Length: 108
Picture 1 (cartoon, rainbow, N blue to C red):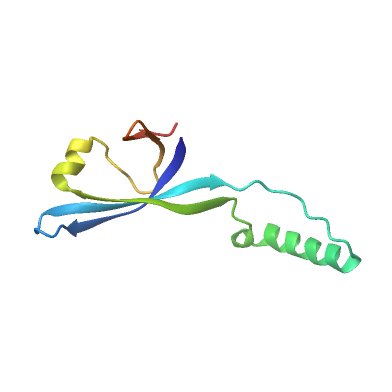
Picture 2: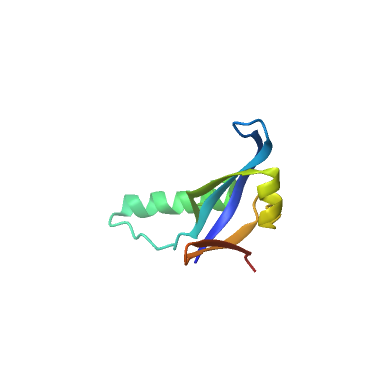
């Protein structure tokens, strides 16, 4: 089972002119943090300065999430309704691929 997040939903028209949706799903992973210990005194000083800056300026903090493109769905309005899922941007789903079927379940 893979966790995916809805990155983007766009309105589209298929080749016959029918209205539909383009739903972009990205894989949602958490990157484990590990401590890097610099070998030199200069390296430790730089690491301490960066750590202090990150505390003072939250926008400089490291991102712990990493997103990989996973799937793009092109669905007509009718197909979207038949699927029975109301996709929301930034919502996380569990994606199960098995037995020639694709299943989506909202992540807890």
